[in-house]
Length: 53
Image 1 (cartoon, helix red, strand yellow):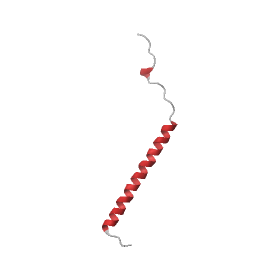
Image 2 (tube, helix red, strand yellow):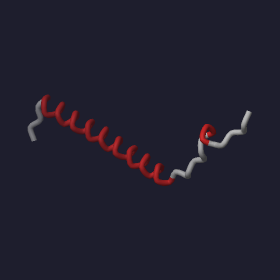
Image 3 (tube, one colour):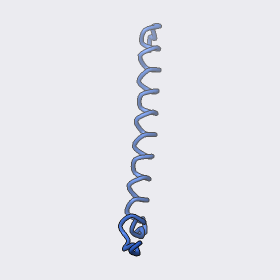
């Protein structure tokens, strides 16, 4: 196949975008999985009953 400088640049740009998109999708999927596994957190200190002064 005949390759011009422009077609090489276009192919390189396409590959870089594809790599970035795949990387973001993987990171997003991992965050979603960790959010599903998250343990319930205890209530914040401000929401707990306090003693009268």
